[in-house]
Image 1: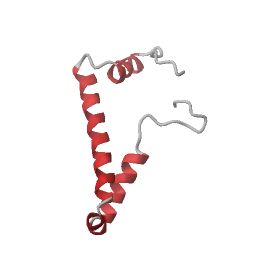
Image 2: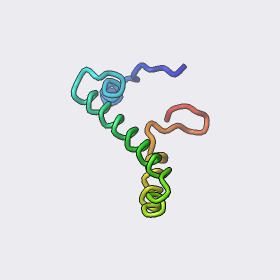
Image 3: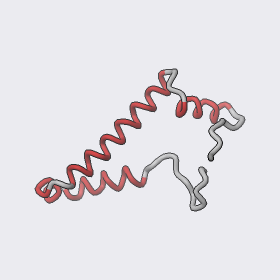
Image 4: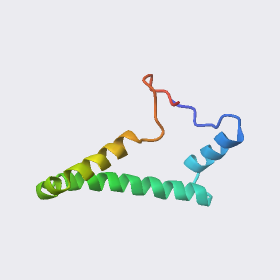
Length: 83
């Protein structure tokens, strides 16, 4: 299992607190942005399943779907370990 404890360094410690703790405004904002991104991604997939919407908005929906898929964070390398 991955080690969820922050490495030494102020930036990494702060990033760890934002991602894994929602006790402060930055952590709560991270959670809200993540939820919005997930809901938007699901909405795009749902819209693509409606034939007339997909025909009319094929390119923007495809771009939105690929952007949400390819811009995932955190990214991992081929070995499956976090970068």
